Length: 299
Image 1 (cartoon, rainbow, N blue to C red):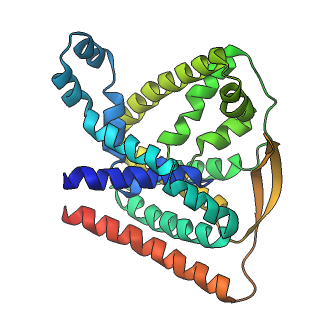
Image 2: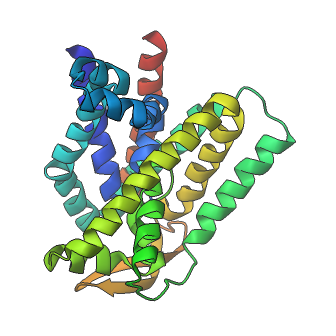
């Protein structure tokens, strides 16, 4: 029971992360040491799992897919999005520097501890890390595409958008903004109950979920150091977005609300109470990851 309570709390943390731009649930899964189990559980939803389910072998199906693990994580995430995550969204809107500072501390510490899991540091792994960092950073400078209702493109949006949930440092909603279809798929289609668009988008997301989980699971098994270098680079690149002291440079209005596309960064010139509080929250974020890592080692 204790295991599932802790797992549920980790799922809640993933849900909160998905509300904060630039922080993904995959990052929190890596920090809390459930990323590989999460990917393996998603990967297990294959033909064999379908056969077990259709034959009524529910117990075997649950064991094969590690269903209780997945339901606990998703349950925590969903409850978080509709409860605690709303509080974080309020805090982000009213106290942005403090919330960004806390998450900046989390991400800085996670880079170190995730990087520690890379057993071999060679030119190839360092190159992969640098490319992933530059790619993640560069995404924030890409101009959004135009809206496209082509069903094949909607299917592709589903496949690519789901990567934001699975890959640390990437935001699925931000990817959809860049593809030009955020408003079409996550606003208009839901409000208007456009079942055709929603079904194609969900189908693309499911295909992407299966494809990405299998690809990442295979890479973690065969090329673990390389994939950890890639993921560390994704997280490192997201630091530029999470830096607390920044000004909004470019935005886009979607369904009456403003979505940020890019920022300009600066270092605080005054050591006022807000700056001191932000630095303290950074340290708390770093300590939180340190304690999580130590608890995981003891386990």
